[in-house]
Length: 203
Image 1 (cartoon, rainbow, N blue to C red):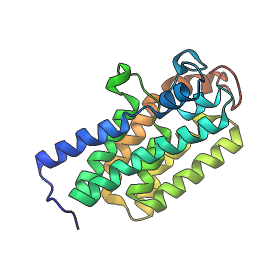
Image 2: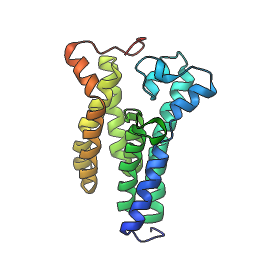
Image 3: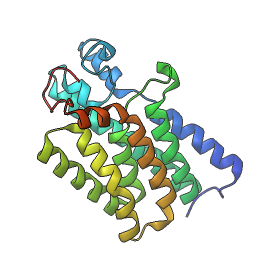
Image 4: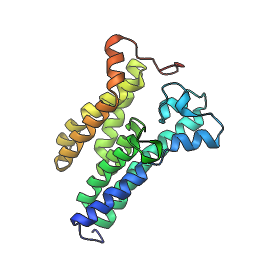
């Protein structure tokens, strides 16, 4: 039972909080704390776990993956507890936008995959698990990180419908479109056969 009834003002506040939580650039923070260099000048220049892995520090990459996913889940769970399901969905979208377009980094953030999966696990854990499975299968089959991202995003709406979470379908569609938009260059490289495989030094 939410502690505060959802209203336009409440939803706006959770949108702001979700954005701020999502905009925490854990990859940048960990790279600085662990003296891994400036992620902007490494590999793809992205702030996510895949690019952190290009520093050669697997621990930092794993922590980035976990923390980027956790921030999405935290935003959703807090909003749901205090203000209900509508607020949870608003916070989910805001956290994704915060990760992809953080104000602190000139709106140049990550591609949102870990945060996307964290959001789904918190919103509807069966869907989240199914999307994680889709990500793993695609990555193991192709050894291309972006293929996992695209596979999990593309199947998320199907899982939402068939696993009984149709109330989040519109959110799922928006998040899927956002993931595909953020991976537009990856899609171009996949079509051209130029997309690097996991472990490559350059993106």
